[in-house]
Image (cartoon, rainbow, N blue to C red; front, top):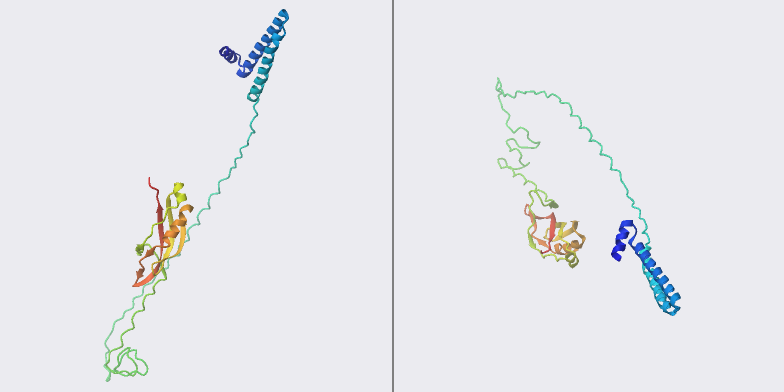
Length: 262
């Protein structure tokens, strides 16, 4: 019977629940009419009271079950707010290049420096060194010491000044990286391992003259990995970097890689 009811619902375009309810109500009404008719003919009304009570109980329970299925509260309508941001204005054009200064013609002057012998020889020729100093002795040595011995050698020139050692240099170019002599491995943080976080922590440090790590700073890296990398690199030791035979401080970048095993 239910199959026929379902086919009628599809044919008439009604809701299945409503059509089934109407069909059951019609059957119940027909059954009640039959009971009352039978009781009126036989005169035994007690026989009809028990089925009528069961029918009303079934109708009440059915209403309690069907009511929440038929009455559905609508969900609140949510509004979707979309904000549109205008694109930034294009950057201004670059300034025009500065005009080149006008070229000034260069005049070349050639000076003839030709030594000519005198036509008349003087009776006496002055002996001495051109560019002497006041108080010097004739026949002395250029650059000598006043009051020194004639014919002695000039004092040796002073040694060239020693090149100043830079206070701090950066690794790169002609400066090679410092040699690492003590490298304790950083521990993998348990929380980062549980979250399957891996990557590289890049640090910037100053290798002091004695090879210890100074002024350690974080350039980039995941927050869960940074603390363990700082604690490990702070204990690293390097061989001092020499420049002209003197130890110098070196600024370098250090990469600490964290990789999970497959």
